[in-house]
Length: 337
Image 1: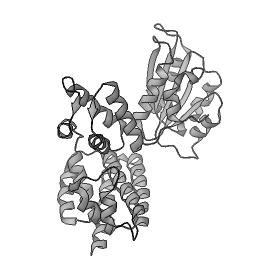
Image 2 (image 1 turned 180 degrees about the vertical axis):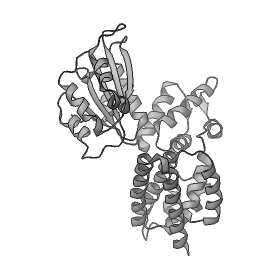
Image 3 (image 1 turned 90 degrees about the horizontal axis):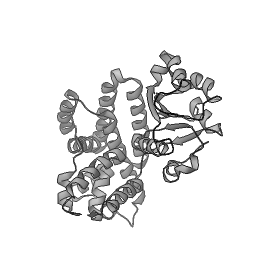
Image 4 (image 1 turned 120 degrees about the vertical axis):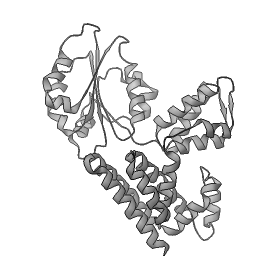
C-alpha cells in the first residue's frame, strides 16, 4: 500500500496496526523523520536492531534469529535493514506471511525504479506500507523552517528564510543542522538579522562549490580548470555537487519558461522567487543566454544518470563525475563562441 510521506508524519496513529514498512528514495532526511514517527508508535522500551542488506545476504540466519528469537530487554523489537534492493526479495518473501505482531520491520532503500520487484511487492500488499521519499521542494523546506522558528519563538525576515532554504540545497538534514545553530545563537536574541544569519550558517564547501558550478554553466574554461585541479586533489561529496547543479539548472528552466517578448530576461531575473541575490544576477543572465530550455531539460536527465553511475561504480565515480562536468563546461563554452 502506497502512503504519502506527510500522511505518516502528521497522522502516525493511523498506521499503528502496521508493522512492515518500505522507505525508498533519495531524501535521507525525510526517511529519518518517518522513522522517528514510526518509533513513536512502538513500545518505548522496544529493542532496536539495525543491519544492512549485505549482512542479510551473507548470513540470512541473522535476520531470522533477530525476528523470531525472544528479547531479554523488551517484549517488542524494531528491526531496520538499510541499503536494500531487489536482492533482498527472497529473504523477505519467507518472512512476510509470518511476521510476528510485536516485530516492526523497516526496509530502507535508495532509488527504486517502477520495475523494482521489492517496490512492487510493498505497493501491492495490503498489510505493508510503502513510502516514496522524494527530494524536498522549496515549499517543504520553508514549512519546516517556519515551524522550527515558531516553536522556538525566533523572528527572521523573509529574505533570511529564503537564504537559509536556498543554501540547504534541497536537503532537510542540512536545513535542520543550520536551524540548530540558529536556535543556539538565539538564546539571548530572538530576532536574527540577515547579516547574523550569514555568519551563523556554514554549509561545508558551499561557497567554492557554487563558484565551480557557475563557472561550468557559463563555459569559463580557464577558471573552471583551475578549480577542477583543486577539487580533484581533495575529497569531495559528488552527490552534494550534483544536487547543487540540479537545483541551479532547474531554476534556469523555470526562469526560461517565464521569458517572452513582453517579459524580458532582466524583468524575469529581478522578479524571480525566491529572489536572486544581486551578486549572481549577471551570472544567471549569462547562463540563460547560453542555454536553451530543451538543453537544460536534457541536463537534468544527465545529472540523474551521472548520480546513478557514481553510486553503481564507486571505484571510478570520481572519473565519471569530473568527465561529466568537463563535458558540460565545454558545451557551454562552444555556445558562447
